[in-house]
Amino acid sequence: MIAPLKYRLPLLLLLFVSSALLVKAQTEPQIQNLLVELWPEFDRPEVLVIYRVQLSDDTPLPTTVTFPLPGYIETMNAVAYGEGNDLISIDENEIDITHRDDALFVTFSTPSPLVQLEYYDGEIISRQDQTRTLDYTFTAPYAIDNAIFQFQGPSQATDFSLEPAADNTFVDPNGLTYNVINESNLAAGASRTIVATYQRPTDALTLQLLTPPVSEHAEDVLPLTTEPPVDSTNTIIAYSLAGVGTLLILGAVGHWWWNRSRAPSGPVRRPAVSSRDRATRAGSGRKPSSQTEGKTGGFCYQCGTPLRADANFCHKCGAERR
Image (tube, rainbow, N blue to C red; front, side):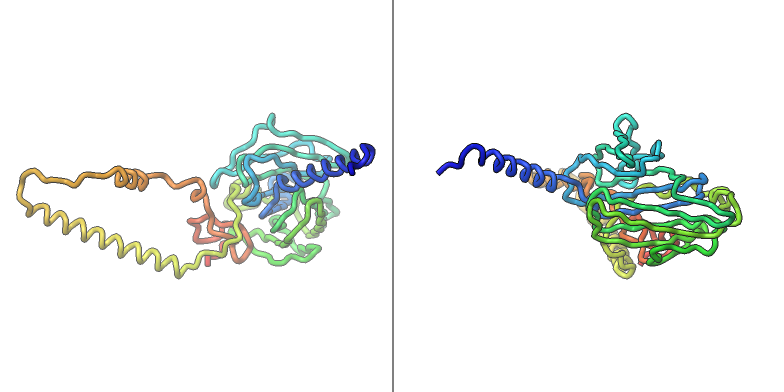
């Protein structure tokens, strides 16, 4: 028996909405790793807010992402995507900035899973004599597997406190203290509020007080990874084996040259090279694929900062790679 039309229409509508929600859930990006850095009074009296994002491996690329920010933010300091260990700025004409209710939504397309955003926020920091209070609220644009919130203590700051309490702290080579909070499994739309207070006897910017001066911004965006740090013992063994291999190759070359010098002169017959051999030889000279380029050496065991593959020390806290 076929249901009357008046009953079939709501059912069809329900199926259509369910299918649309399922497609959206399958295609919506997911963030694998997120690093949010807050630098108060660094190169401007406001707070420099930096998002470093790594989308999940199963995110189809290119993809369009949207980040909700406070509605009073007027301009972005930087919007870029990562290409290897470099940043490529996205043209402002390709960025859609929309104000809705009390929020600002920044939307753009990225061909890379690595994204970085920067903006200055003067509303989240307040001053009363020498006391500074920083009240920051983060809203997850998508589901996030791992999130790190990292507060940079300004130069000459004392009595720094954080609520919730920092999971760990470290000091970088410039003598600046960083307070780190770790979060995991944040749902899309979830909010986290972090309040920091500290004392500071000067209004001079941190960049002006550092000796020698440093660059105005952190290291360029790097691929984030949850892989464990490289074992230094295995690295030493690998280099040793490589050295032995080099000696064996040099010995073989010398032996061949010595035999060649003793061989009688005259034409030498060479075996024919098959098409498979040519393909093998040609393939051996190919450049590595983009999947093998730009990889990093995991996180710093001390501060959680992503490391470059060739780095022996953390560029943030100076800790030696394990």
